[in-house]
Every structure is written in C-alpha cells, then in structure tokens.
Length: 301
Length: 87
Image 1 (cartoon, each protein chain N blue to C red):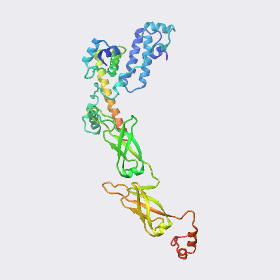
Image 2: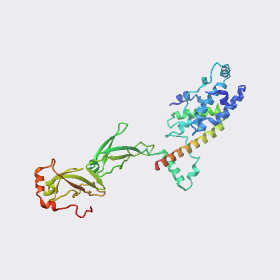
Image 3: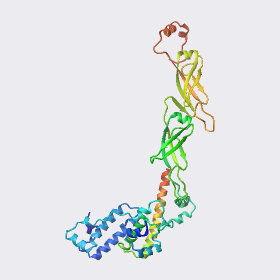
Image 4: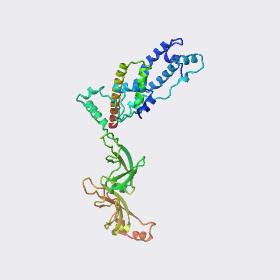
C-alpha cells in the first residue's frame, strides 16, 4: 500500500481538519456507490479509506508517524456496496424510472422499447435455454422420442418430428428458465444434429442409396433387399439393369411438409463375382456379340 | 432477515431506522423482511452521513438521483442484452 499522506494528497504536517477535508473531497469523487459503473473506484476508495482510517485517528497516526505500524495496518474488510445490489435482478423497491420517463412518452422505436421493458420487468418471462441433441439419420426421417438429460439432472422429453433436417431447432414451450411474476417460463430451444449415415444421401425430401447387384441379377433381374430408414424392403430389379440404373421406391423418402413423402432412389452398380470366375471368362471369350458392342461409341477419344 | 438482525448487521440504531423508514430511504418487503440490499443501502447512507459529511436533505437528493441512475443503468443493460441477442 502506498503512503497514506500521498493517497490523501496532504503534507505530513497537515492538521486533523486538513486531513478530514481532503478525505471528504476525494471520497465524494471515489465512493463506489457514486460511481456505479467504474470498477476501479472500489480499489481506489478502499485505499483512500484505509489511508483515512490511519491518519484520521490521532493515536494511529502517531504510531504510524513513529513507525510502529505500517500503512497496511488499517485495511478495511471486503465490503458489498449498494451498487452491487442495485444492478442485480429481482425485487427492487427503489427502482426509479423518472430519469428517462420522458423518453418513453415520445413515439419512436426507443420509446417503444422503454415501455416494453418497463412493463416486462415486473413480469419478465424466463430466459430461453439452449441445448444440443444428436440423433441418428434414420430417426430424423422416421421421427423418434428422445430424452435429454439436462446439466441439473432434469430430464426433457423431446419428440423428434419425422423429416427433421440437420441443424433444425425445436422449441419446447415453457421448458426454459422460470420467469418472474406472471411472466411464465422461457422455452427450451434444442438444436438437433443429425448424424450422417454413409449409406444414404438426402436431397430435399428424396433419399438416394447405392446398392450393388450381381451380374446375374443385372442380366436376369430379380428381387433384392434394400435398406430404407424405416427398415428393409424388397424391390424388383428389372431384367437388363445396368450400373447407374436408378429405381424409385415411392414414398420411402422424408415426409413432406403438409402430408405425403418424398421418394428413395436406388442407384444400382453391377459387381462382377469375386474371385474371377473361370466359367464366366470362358463364356465371355466365346461371346462374339459381346465383343461387337462398343459402349464408348459416340465418346470422343 | 428480521429487523433485529438488520440493526445488528448494519450498525444502525432503532430510532435512526424509524426515521429512514419514514423517509422511505429503506423499504423492507411486504413481510417486513430486510435483505442484504437494505444492509448495503444502510451502509451507503452511513457513509454519506459520516465520512462524506452530507446532511439529511443532501442524502435525500443523492438517493433519489442514485435510484434514477440505477434505473437508467438497468434499461441500458437490458438494451445491450436485447441488441446482442438480435445481432
């Protein structure tokens, strides 16, 4: 702590009256409650009050001058100033609007804001609370009932509507922080993250999936099992299907806003048998019409 | 806290408290309960009267202006929060 005479701005020879006058003059400027927005005022006022505790008391001043006690001997304990409470939320019987009431009488955006704030303060709605929730891709299409465990141990039941997209925010009315008066609780806002499923690609309401088929299924056609977000279905692969052939599963996509569903598209890719089959090789070697067909016809070389 | 606890914690004597309540410098809640807010406000009044040498008329003016200032600060804080939320 610095020299109390310097803090008060008086000479070591100053009289008791001089010291009191100096203290009052500085205290009026530095009292934290007279400087509600100045965080440094508290430390400076504490130093000032400490200096005055020492020099304002003739006995302590004598002992300080004689070197018996140092400047820190007179520190005041931590104090909560009124400004700390005046700034806090909640009941405030001292609140005064007369400092800006005239602003609220005009007819502009600012006045509107002041009027809303003033009436809202007594019955303020609780704050909205934000949460995140990750769900599986299939759940985003079919919908699901999820539980969210909050940091305070509470449980929130969240109904995932079918067709939800990644990043969508669900609002649960009244599940936020409690309000004041008749303000009512705020809402819980849940941002839903949809975990990607590598099998499916979503484009709007439609889904696309790549499904491999064997050479015989491609040539002869057949029934195959295809996964959808709501479970596997059986679908017909027509005779002569090719890699890139796209089939449509009607109504197996994401639900549409206002009813109905998008479609799921199934893109086929033909896969040769593994390991290479000698019988197939022998057949293709003697298959003259196959050699005449050039799939690159028309492709610039 | 009760009136007795308040007197003990704030260092205010009964007669003084009567005057302050009458002046509405202090306003306990409906159930005559005092809070930490009242203790802090009482300390402020004591500081003004003692260390700062303000007389009773001066205290009345200062409290009124301070209450207005805190009203404005609240509105300003609210405005800052609202603007921050919209941004």
